[in-house]
Image (cartoon, rainbow, N blue to C red; front, side, top):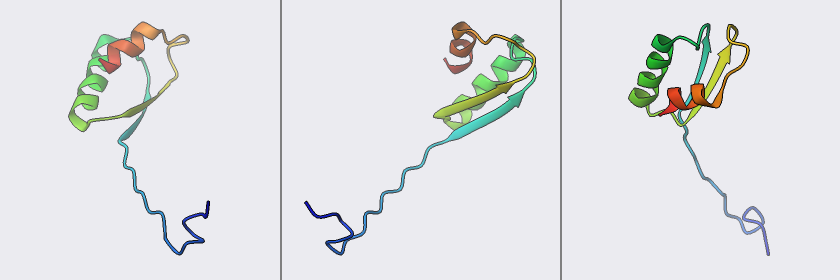
Length: 68
């Protein structure tokens, strides 16, 4: 099978994804989780990256509380 380039065609697929990266201090507080949750809903975020410096262990429950 020939590649698209060899056949003289170009493969052009553009995929857009909304990514939010948040450097937060104190994800353990409910108020900050609410802020992130509202931001996710408002902006339609598909991938969330959280940098947390205050909480030593981030539990699954904390992640679920932010995302749902």
